[in-house]
Image (cartoon, rainbow, N blue to C red):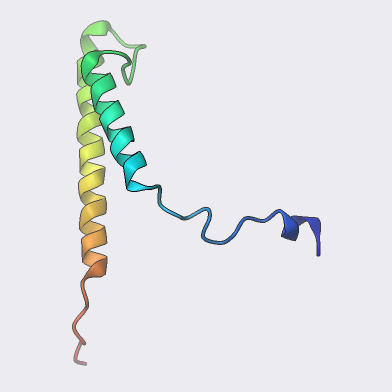
Length: 84
């Protein structure tokens, strides 16, 4: 057995989705931290533009969640046999 084979992770280890509790915690933290002003997405721009970047970040994240949900839902549907 070679060294690289002995330290290689299990195939499913890198592609296993995080637990739902972690996703819920990460979403809640991001929303609370952004809304409360603890941190901002882009602090290098003028302070008046911070809410624009923060809102864009939240909207982009919501769009990505929706797209992922729709893709997941679409992949779970059973496809009807197609006639040729």
